[in-house]
Amino acid sequence: MFFKKNGKDVIFDMNELKQFSCSFDFKAMNAFSIERQYDFKLQTDVTVIGYVKNENIEEWCIHCSKESHEELVKKFNEFMSMK
Image 1 (cartoon, rainbow, N blue to C red):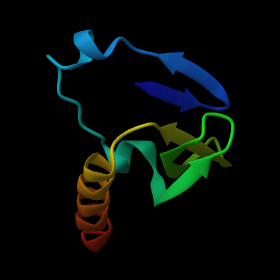
Image 2: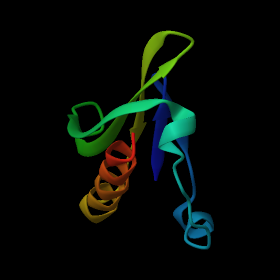
Image 3: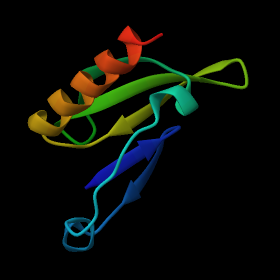
Image 4: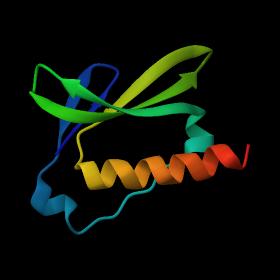
C-alpha cells in the first residue's frame, strides 16, 4: 500500500497493515473534498482528499481499493452533512 503526501510516496508493508485499522478525522484535517483519480505514474486509481493547511490547499493521495474509497466517501459525506 502506498500513501502519498505532498508529492512524496510512503510505502507500507501490507502484512503489517492488515492488523491495523485507520480512521480519518476530516474536521481536524480541514478537509473539503474527496475524489477518485488515476495516478499515471503508478498506473492505478488513488483517493485524493483535499484539505486546507495554513491557508494553503493541500492534497493527500491514498492508494486504496475501490471499496475502501467508497467507505471513505460515505464517511466524508456524513462529515459534510454535519457542518
